[in-house]
Length: 245
Image (cartoon, rainbow, N blue to C red; front, side):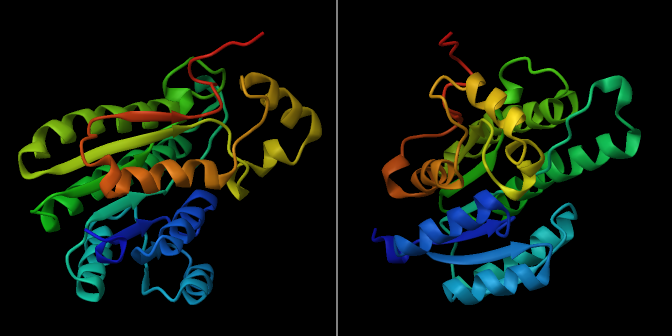
Protein backbone atom coordinates (compact mmCIF):
# COMPACT_ATOMS: atom_id res chain seq x y z
CA UNK A 1 0.00 0.00 0.00
CA UNK A 2 1.50 3.34 -1.04
CA UNK A 3 1.73 6.30 1.30
CA UNK A 4 -0.67 8.22 -0.95
CA UNK A 5 -3.35 5.62 -0.18
CA UNK A 6 -3.05 6.42 3.52
CA UNK A 7 -5.54 8.83 5.06
CA UNK A 8 -5.07 10.09 8.62
CA UNK A 9 -7.18 12.26 10.89
CA UNK A 10 -4.99 14.43 13.15
CA UNK A 11 -6.78 15.68 16.26
CA UNK A 12 -5.18 18.57 18.13
CA UNK A 13 -3.50 19.52 14.88
CA UNK A 14 -2.55 23.07 15.85
CA UNK A 15 -0.43 22.16 18.87
CA UNK A 16 3.33 21.89 18.59
CA UNK A 17 3.38 18.12 18.16
CA UNK A 18 0.12 17.98 16.17
CA UNK A 19 1.33 20.50 13.61
CA UNK A 20 4.69 18.74 13.29
CA UNK A 21 2.90 15.43 12.75
CA UNK A 22 0.60 16.91 10.11
CA UNK A 23 3.58 18.36 8.24
CA UNK A 24 5.51 15.09 8.50
CA UNK A 25 2.61 13.05 7.15
CA UNK A 26 1.96 15.41 4.24
CA UNK A 27 5.67 15.42 3.36
CA UNK A 28 5.48 11.62 3.14
CA UNK A 29 2.50 11.76 0.81
CA UNK A 30 -0.18 10.87 3.35
CA UNK A 31 -3.52 12.59 2.98
CA UNK A 32 -4.61 14.28 6.19
CA UNK A 33 -7.70 15.83 7.73
CA UNK A 34 -7.04 18.31 10.52
CA UNK A 35 -9.11 19.15 13.58
CA UNK A 36 -8.51 21.38 16.59
CA UNK A 37 -10.35 23.92 18.69
CA UNK A 38 -9.21 27.28 17.28
CA UNK A 39 -10.55 28.02 13.79
CA UNK A 40 -8.01 30.73 12.89
CA UNK A 41 -4.86 28.72 13.60
CA UNK A 42 -6.44 25.59 12.16
CA UNK A 43 -7.37 27.33 8.91
CA UNK A 44 -3.83 28.72 8.61
CA UNK A 45 -2.25 25.27 9.00
CA UNK A 46 -4.78 23.69 6.67
CA UNK A 47 -4.05 26.37 4.08
CA UNK A 48 -0.31 25.75 4.39
CA UNK A 49 -0.75 22.01 3.86
CA UNK A 50 -3.67 22.10 1.44
CA UNK A 51 -5.65 19.88 3.81
CA UNK A 52 -9.35 19.77 4.68
CA UNK A 53 -10.19 20.68 8.26
CA UNK A 54 -12.91 21.13 10.86
CA UNK A 55 -12.80 23.11 14.10
CA UNK A 56 -14.06 21.11 17.09
CA UNK A 57 -13.96 20.95 20.87
CA UNK A 58 -12.39 17.52 21.14
CA UNK A 59 -13.33 17.06 24.79
CA UNK A 60 -16.85 16.54 23.42
CA UNK A 61 -17.24 13.05 21.95
CA UNK A 62 -20.03 14.17 19.64
CA UNK A 63 -17.63 16.68 18.09
CA UNK A 64 -14.91 14.03 17.75
CA UNK A 65 -17.47 11.88 15.94
CA UNK A 66 -18.41 14.81 13.70
CA UNK A 67 -14.77 15.49 12.82
CA UNK A 68 -14.24 11.79 12.12
CA UNK A 69 -17.29 11.63 9.84
CA UNK A 70 -16.10 14.76 8.03
CA UNK A 71 -12.67 13.19 7.54
CA UNK A 72 -14.22 10.04 6.06
CA UNK A 73 -16.41 12.17 3.79
CA UNK A 74 -13.36 14.07 2.53
CA UNK A 75 -10.72 11.35 2.41
CA UNK A 76 -12.62 8.09 2.18
CA UNK A 77 -11.71 5.20 4.47
CA UNK A 78 -9.24 6.24 7.17
CA UNK A 79 -6.06 4.28 7.82
CA UNK A 80 -5.17 6.19 10.97
CA UNK A 81 -6.27 8.59 13.67
CA UNK A 82 -3.76 10.44 15.87
CA UNK A 83 -4.68 12.32 19.01
CA UNK A 84 -2.27 15.14 19.85
CA UNK A 85 -4.63 16.99 22.21
CA UNK A 86 -3.15 17.74 25.61
CA UNK A 87 -2.50 20.11 28.48
CA UNK A 88 0.10 20.55 31.20
CA UNK A 89 -0.59 21.28 34.86
CA UNK A 90 2.37 21.40 37.23
CA UNK A 91 1.00 21.47 40.77
CA UNK A 92 1.09 19.17 43.78
CA UNK A 93 -2.20 17.43 44.52
CA UNK A 94 -3.04 19.54 47.57
CA UNK A 95 -2.86 22.77 45.53
CA UNK A 96 -4.79 21.42 42.54
CA UNK A 97 -8.31 22.77 42.24
CA UNK A 98 -11.15 20.49 41.23
CA UNK A 99 -11.78 22.31 37.96
CA UNK A 100 -8.06 22.16 37.09
CA UNK A 101 -8.07 18.42 37.59
CA UNK A 102 -11.25 17.99 35.57
CA UNK A 103 -9.76 20.08 32.76
CA UNK A 104 -6.62 17.93 32.76
CA UNK A 105 -8.66 14.73 32.57
CA UNK A 106 -10.88 16.13 29.83
CA UNK A 107 -8.02 17.32 27.63
CA UNK A 108 -5.87 14.24 27.98
CA UNK A 109 -7.95 11.17 28.87
CA UNK A 110 -11.45 12.06 27.69
CA UNK A 111 -10.17 13.06 24.25
CA UNK A 112 -8.10 9.86 24.03
CA UNK A 113 -11.08 7.66 24.90
CA UNK A 114 -13.26 9.54 22.42
CA UNK A 115 -10.61 8.97 19.75
CA UNK A 116 -10.64 5.21 20.32
CA UNK A 117 -14.46 5.20 20.19
CA UNK A 118 -14.48 7.08 16.91
CA UNK A 119 -11.78 4.92 15.37
CA UNK A 120 -13.57 1.71 16.32
CA UNK A 121 -16.77 3.04 14.75
CA UNK A 122 -15.33 3.90 11.32
CA UNK A 123 -12.19 1.75 10.95
CA UNK A 124 -13.61 -1.74 10.57
CA UNK A 125 -10.88 -3.09 8.30
CA UNK A 126 -7.79 -2.33 10.36
CA UNK A 127 -5.67 0.75 10.77
CA UNK A 128 -3.79 2.60 13.46
CA UNK A 129 -4.72 4.74 16.44
CA UNK A 130 -1.91 6.72 18.07
CA UNK A 131 -2.38 8.52 21.37
CA UNK A 132 -0.10 10.70 23.52
CA UNK A 133 1.01 9.80 27.03
CA UNK A 134 3.99 11.26 28.92
CA UNK A 135 7.18 10.15 30.61
CA UNK A 136 5.62 11.46 33.83
CA UNK A 137 3.23 8.49 33.78
CA UNK A 138 6.21 6.13 33.85
CA UNK A 139 8.33 7.64 36.60
CA UNK A 140 7.63 9.76 39.64
CA UNK A 141 8.05 13.46 38.88
CA UNK A 142 7.17 15.98 41.57
CA UNK A 143 4.15 18.21 40.94
CA UNK A 144 2.87 16.09 38.05
CA UNK A 145 0.04 14.31 39.86
CA UNK A 146 -2.84 15.43 37.62
CA UNK A 147 -1.13 14.93 34.29
CA UNK A 148 0.41 11.63 35.42
CA UNK A 149 -3.03 10.38 36.45
CA UNK A 150 -4.58 11.38 33.13
CA UNK A 151 -1.79 10.00 30.98
CA UNK A 152 -1.53 6.86 33.08
CA UNK A 153 -5.15 6.32 32.10
CA UNK A 154 -4.14 6.72 28.45
CA UNK A 155 -1.57 3.94 28.81
CA UNK A 156 -4.15 1.63 30.34
CA UNK A 157 -6.56 2.52 27.55
CA UNK A 158 -3.94 1.60 24.95
CA UNK A 159 -3.52 -1.88 26.40
CA UNK A 160 -7.20 -2.68 26.71
CA UNK A 161 -8.25 -1.20 23.37
CA UNK A 162 -5.38 -2.94 21.57
CA UNK A 163 -6.64 -6.26 22.95
CA UNK A 164 -10.27 -5.51 22.12
CA UNK A 165 -9.75 -4.50 18.50
CA UNK A 166 -6.83 -6.73 17.50
CA UNK A 167 -9.17 -9.22 15.82
CA UNK A 168 -10.18 -6.57 13.30
CA UNK A 169 -6.60 -5.45 12.70
CA UNK A 170 -7.00 -2.11 14.44
CA UNK A 171 -3.74 -1.25 16.19
CA UNK A 172 -3.62 1.06 19.23
CA UNK A 173 -0.35 2.56 20.46
CA UNK A 174 0.95 5.68 22.18
CA UNK A 175 4.03 7.83 22.50
CA UNK A 176 5.25 9.07 25.87
CA UNK A 177 7.35 12.21 25.37
CA UNK A 178 9.64 13.88 27.84
CA UNK A 179 9.72 17.67 27.88
CA UNK A 180 9.17 18.95 24.36
CA UNK A 181 9.76 22.55 23.28
CA UNK A 182 6.24 23.63 22.28
CA UNK A 183 3.97 26.59 23.09
CA UNK A 184 2.46 24.41 25.84
CA UNK A 185 5.77 24.20 27.71
CA UNK A 186 7.01 27.76 27.19
CA UNK A 187 6.88 28.52 30.92
CA UNK A 188 9.67 25.97 31.31
CA UNK A 189 11.58 26.28 28.05
CA UNK A 190 11.36 30.08 28.15
CA UNK A 191 13.21 30.24 31.48
CA UNK A 192 16.95 29.63 31.24
CA UNK A 193 17.29 28.10 34.75
CA UNK A 194 14.23 25.89 34.28
CA UNK A 195 15.37 24.81 30.84
CA UNK A 196 18.85 23.96 32.09
CA UNK A 197 17.41 21.88 34.92
CA UNK A 198 15.11 20.08 32.51
CA UNK A 199 17.92 19.34 30.08
CA UNK A 200 19.91 17.79 32.91
CA UNK A 201 17.02 15.41 33.68
CA UNK A 202 17.18 13.92 30.17
CA UNK A 203 20.02 11.47 29.61
CA UNK A 204 20.64 12.81 26.09
CA UNK A 205 21.16 16.29 27.51
CA UNK A 206 18.44 18.17 25.69
CA UNK A 207 14.68 18.61 25.64
CA UNK A 208 12.72 17.29 22.70
CA UNK A 209 11.56 18.99 19.55
CA UNK A 210 8.11 18.39 18.06
CA UNK A 211 9.65 16.59 15.09
CA UNK A 212 11.22 14.03 17.45
CA UNK A 213 7.78 12.92 18.59
CA UNK A 214 6.10 13.36 15.21
CA UNK A 215 8.56 10.95 13.58
CA UNK A 216 7.61 8.15 15.96
CA UNK A 217 3.90 8.86 15.62
CA UNK A 218 4.16 8.86 11.82
CA UNK A 219 5.94 5.50 11.96
CA UNK A 220 3.19 4.03 14.16
CA UNK A 221 0.58 5.32 11.72
CA UNK A 222 2.33 3.81 8.72
CA UNK A 223 2.72 0.36 7.18
CA UNK A 224 6.17 -0.17 8.69
CA UNK A 225 4.55 -0.65 12.12
CA UNK A 226 1.91 -3.12 10.91
CA UNK A 227 2.91 -5.69 13.58
CA UNK A 228 3.00 -3.24 16.50
CA UNK A 229 0.09 -2.79 18.90
CA UNK A 230 -0.51 -2.23 22.61
CA UNK A 231 2.75 -0.32 23.03
CA UNK A 232 3.69 3.00 24.61
CA UNK A 233 6.97 4.29 23.21
CA UNK A 234 9.12 6.61 25.28
CA UNK A 235 10.26 9.43 23.00
CA UNK A 236 11.88 11.21 25.88
CA UNK A 237 15.65 11.48 25.65
CA UNK A 238 15.88 8.72 28.23
CA UNK A 239 13.87 10.59 30.88
CA UNK A 240 11.50 7.72 31.58
CA UNK A 241 14.11 5.00 32.01
CA UNK A 242 17.67 6.31 32.38
CA UNK A 243 19.80 8.15 34.89
CA UNK A 244 23.12 9.09 33.34
CA UNK A 245 24.53 11.02 36.30
